Structures are given as C-alpha cells and as structure tokens.
Image 1: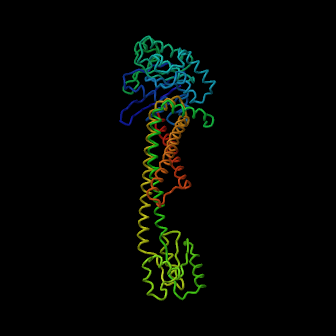
Image 2 (image 1 turned 30 degrees about the vertical axis):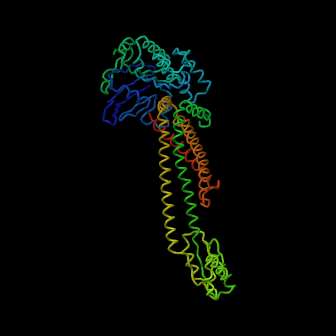
Image 3 (image 1 turned 90 degrees about the horizontal axis):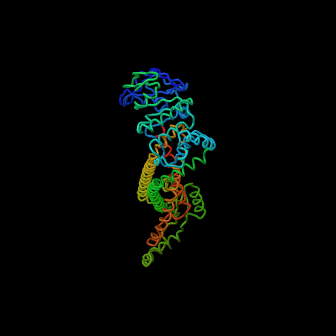
Length: 224
Length: 294
C-alpha cells in the first residue's frame, strides 16, 4: 500500500526532517509511529498525503509515485486517504452533520449518498444523537470521534492519525483506539503517530520508531 | 463540474456571507469607501476635461481677405476652407458686418469712427477647428490660398493654452491610474483578510480531496458579490452626491460648464461597478490559491 525508498526530506532552514527512510506498509496494517517531538513523524505523514514532496527518494502510495503526481491529481490521491489531526481542524460554525457532509460534497457525492454515509459513520463513532450539535459543544473525545468520522466518511484505503489520543483521558483514549481497531479490521490501513505508551504497549501492533529523522526500530507487535 | 454544482457554490457563498456577517459588512464598507474616492476623482476629472475642452474650443482662426475680392472668389475660398477636414465651422464676416461689430463693441465711444470716411475693416472668415492641436497647420494651409491678406490665430496664446491643457490631462491620467492601482491593491487586501479568516476551511477542503476549483468557486462568487454590492452602493451615493453638488455650484456660478448628462455619467458608473466586481473576483481567486497548497 505504501512504500518509501531512500527518502530524504530537507526543509529550507537546512533541517533534515527525514533521512534515508525505507519502509513497506502492507494493505490493512496498523502501524504506530513513535519517537520524540521533532523526530519526523508529521513529515512522514505529510509525505503520504502529498502535503510535501520528498527532497530525494521515492514515495509510492497505492501505486502512485507522489513526487511525480501533477498538482491537478492531488485531490484524487487524497480521496483515498483520511486524515485525523491532533488539533481536530473542525469547522466550528457548522454542525456535526455539516462537518462530515461538507467533505463528501467536496468530492462530488450526491445528496443521497451523503445522507447515507453520514448516518453510517455517525453510528459507527457513536455520535448519531449529536448530528445537529456544533463542535464546540462536544467534549474532546467527541470532537476526536467527529474527526475520525469525517476522515473515514468516503471509505479511504489509508487513515493517517496524528496523536489522536494526545489530549484525552485514558478511558476516552481507549475508546478512540477501539474505534480505530474496528476501522482497521474492516480493511483500512492505519498509521498512527503517538506518544501514548500505555496504549501502544497494550495494542501489540507494528511499531516504527523515528529518531532524528531515521527509522531506529521497526518491530511487529512492538512496544513504546 | 461548474454547472453541476452551481447551486451549491451559490449557497455556500451566501451562507458564508451570513456566517461572517460582520466581516463581510466591514469589507463592503471599506471597499465602498475606496470606490467612492475613485468615483469622486473620476467626476472631477471629467468636469476638468469639459472645462479644458471649452477653453480650447474658444481658439479660432481669423482669415482676413484682400479688399478687391469678388463674391465668386469668396465662395470659392469658402469651399476651399470648408474642404479642409479639420475645420468645424466656417463663418463669413463681410466688411459691413465687421464695421457693425466694431460699432457695437465701441458702444458709447463709437464717435471715434466718424472721423473715418471709408470702412477700413477687411472682410474675414472666422474658422473653428475640430482639433485645437491642428490649428497651426490649418492656418499655414490657408495662408497659401489666393486673396488671403493675413491669417491670425493667436499663436502664443494657443500654444500656451495647449501646453497647459496637455499637462493637466497627463497629470489627471497619471493620478487616476495611481488611484485605480491603489484601489485594486487595497480591495484585494481586504478580500485577502476575509479569505484568511477562513483558511482552515480551505485547508480542510483540500485535505479531504476537493479539487482546487471546487474550493475556489464559492469564494469567487462571494468576492464578486462583495465587489458588486460595494460598487453599486458607491455609485448610488456618488450620483446623489454629485447632482446635489452640481445644483449648489450652479446656484453660485450659473454658467460654469458641468457634466450633467446621464449619457456621459453612465460609463463612469459602469466602470466603477466593473472595477469593483473584477477586483472582487480576481482578489478572492488569488487569495484562495495561496491557502490551497497544503
């Protein structure tokens, strides 16, 4: 599903964010991306959804070489990738329903499809009773669930999550994790950048550790 | 895609207008103010132009004829002068008319003329030209005709006047260009601020896989509406203010030439509306483009 060959990423201020990254992520895998702040986790995720291009090396996502992808085709790549941000990136002047339907409308879904999909994902994350609520009236956990619902609404092949449990209490974190496992079981490849030691140790999934831009460790059923 | 989603784009544009009502109002008010300033200057410059045209139209060529000229030669000469493309109006003044005019001008001092037995004044043609800049050339051409005693057109006055109007017009164009340029910059910056306030929305849309145009259209429509409403508002204010001002000025100085014809004013209104709308459209298009590339 995702392959990286000798990938380097340098930012204009001469910071080497990633150095010689080689990785193969198979379809349906669940991967924890761990490492201290500044290790290159966010850069790693950005490469996958083509928020940035590599300075050197190749990144192949679902058979597409993202460095050679023309600007006009980026939207179509992103339709296969759901993204959940640490800072939520919700639209606070719209309801829960509109936050999800807005993204579906953007990729050309019909009104009927939108109604069906929104209902489905709201049921999945357990927010079906809050469809008319504005996000600022939701708890942190509920906002994160809304983000996940929005990210999976168009049934992407890949789900990228950047510290989705970072600001949540352990109970809510585990709920979010269970939700992500559930999505993973349905076939979505998930890459989750995280600091959550407790969660990672408990989950027993593949762990990729980044340090100063390099992969220092890559173990199946690993720990933090 | 555009036509398919037109309804959606308009709904989104109107919705965001409503959601950020205060921002939109502020943007419309500031754009209206800028366009008012441009409009006021436009009105001043068309009136100044009218005034200069009036000054220039007072330039004329007087062709004095030899005393022994026959009626046939007068007719011939007149048709020769009229056939010069650049002449607008050619008026013949006979010796007798010239004398009567002089009498009229002298008024109570007309007794001076009683000392003279024969009418010393020559017959003449008074010629108005289409383009005052051509006056010298036309005068030179007429000098070559037979039975022409002398050609007069107030050479120095004409040159000075034409120099003056030339400088004034150039300065006007320069100031107007600068003003339009400044207004484009200011209006597009105002729009940039309204777009900046919604950069999150743009970022999210592009991350979920919306195409660039899908993101742009609602903003373009909103920018157009902002520009259009502002320019229509400022045009309405300008028209009312202008006619009020014209009335006041005419009460004070009745004969001052001012542009009052709607046919002359309409193009200005249209220009302002076009300026506002176009800058609105282009400004939002470019501003959205800046936040699209995440």
